[in-house]
Image (cartoon, rainbow, N blue to C red; front, top):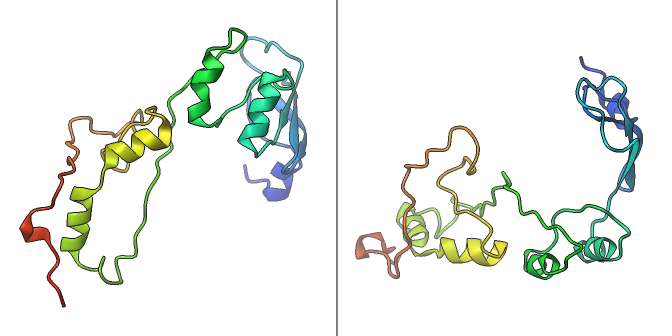
Length: 173
């Protein structure tokens, strides 16, 4: 069924989930109402409001001030403080996000495979993952994120070494 972009952005959509879109205001909010065509157990609420809040500090303030009931993507370093509050429930769920660091391999010095190999051996992957995710992240073993079908858990990750072997050093000139 291809209804076109305008049909979907007008709040229409296929599906038999708990809710359907009553009104959608791009960049502002989405109002959901109970879906009478839902095939499962009736949802808890008749209506839900999803506000677009791009500032994580404002999202956290809204949660702490009881102006919101749910949020995601709060700064990792703030989660422990929220967990300490008895009125808060913090759930750190798995994510299929993968962060990549693309490089221009057409220009020197990264056009040399030996330079790229040396950098990959010297890069502190675990330190970057842990500091960027407050130790909640998992170092990738390929392009498939942990938890998705197709990931080979037995695939070894290269461990960084302090200094790449001399064979990998780029030659001047």
